[in-house]
Image (cartoon, rainbow, N blue to C red):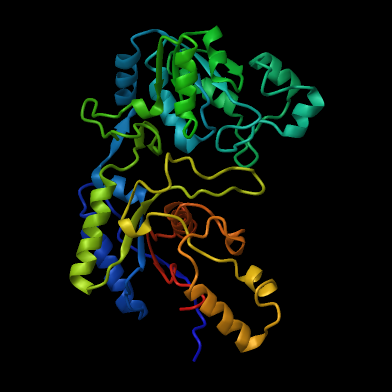
Amino acid sequence: MDRMVGTVVRGLRAPIISKGDDIVEITVDTVLKASECEGFSLRDKDIVGITEAVVARAQGNYANVEQIARDVKDKFSCDTAGLIFPILSRNRFAICLRGIARAFKKIYLMFSYPSDEVGNPLVDYDLLDKEGINPWTDILTEQEFRKHFKDIRHVFTGVDYIQYYSDIIRDSGCEVEVIFANNPVSILKYTKNVLTCDIHSRMRSKRLLKEKGAEKVLGLDDILNHPVNGSGYNEEYGLLGSNKATEDMVKLFPRDCQALVEKIQDKLLELTGKKIEVLVYGDGAFRDPVGKIWELADPVVSPGFTKGLIGTPHELKLKYLADNQFSHLKGNELKKAIADYIMHKDRELNDSMESQGTTPRRLTDLIGSLCDLTSGSGDKGTPIVYIQGYFDNYSV
C-alpha cells in the first residue's frame, strides 16, 4: 500500500518543570513514554524540540529588577541615558524597563515608528501618509506625536505603550522624555550615553552610535551577561530573550543549550539505537497577517541544535516539475517520473529553476517555528515536540 502520511508533529505532555530538574532525563523519558502510549516507533532523523522556557526554568536562570538595576548602574555610571527602540511588550520588556529605570535619574525614551522592530504597531502607515509624516526623517516629541495620532493603543492588547512605559519609568523614581525617530543616532541630540533595546538590528545601532561619537553604548545583550548578586545570566544574549516571570523578576534565555541537545541525542541513541536530532527552540519566525507582528522577539529561533539540523532545505518544487518537465504525463507515470527525478536530484540546487519557490531558510528556523506553533505559549502543556518524516520526500 502506498505511503499516505508525510511529516507528523506531536506535542508531548511533560511534567511541570522547576529549578534543578534534570531536563535531559525528563525529555528522554517523555519521548519514550509518548512512543509507548501512542504506539509510534522512533526512527533515525526524527526530531525532538524542547522549548527554551523549560530549559531556563530547570537552570533557574532568573533575575530580579534590583539585579538588573545594579548591572546597568555599574556599567553606565551616569545619571542620564537614552533608551532606544524598545519593543512594545508587557511580557518581554516591561520588567526589564523597571530595573533599567532604577539605575538613572533621567531617561530619553526613543520609540521607532510606525511600529517596533518586531512589527507591533503604534500607528498605521496610512495615517503617516495622511498626516504628511516621513518616519525616516522626522523626529517627533510626544506632544507632536499625539497631536498627529489620537489613538495609539495596541491593536491586540489595547495598551497605550507610550503611557505605559513612561509610567513604569516615573514609578521607578526616574524622569522620562519621549522621542520618536528611526535613526539610532537621533538620540545623540539628547544624550551621549545609550542603551540600545533593539534585538536583531542591535549591532548596526551600536556601530552607528559609536561612529557618531556616543560615549557609552551598550545593548540589552550587554546587561546580565554575567551573574550579578546571585542572578541568572546569559553570556551571549544578556537580557535579550527574557520573559516576565513575576512582577519583579524575568526568566532569562537559557544557557549551555548546545551541550544539552548533544546529551539528549546521546541518551536517546544509547536507549533506542536511533540517531535523533534535537533542538532547543524559542519564538518562531513568522508574521501575523492581522497585527503585522513578526513573532521573533528572541535573539535566535534556536540557541542549540545537533549537527543534523545544520543547513537549509534541499528540495524541488513538485508543481514546477508537473507543469514543465513532466506535463505530458499523468497518474502513476507522473508519480514515478517525479519520484525518480527527486531521487537523482543534484546536490546543489541554488540556481535551479526546479527549486525556485522553495523556502531558502535555515532548517533550525523552519523547524523551530513549527515547534513553536505546535506547543504554543499558553496552557497546552506540551513543551516537548516530536517530529517525524520532516526530511522525507515524495520518493521515500
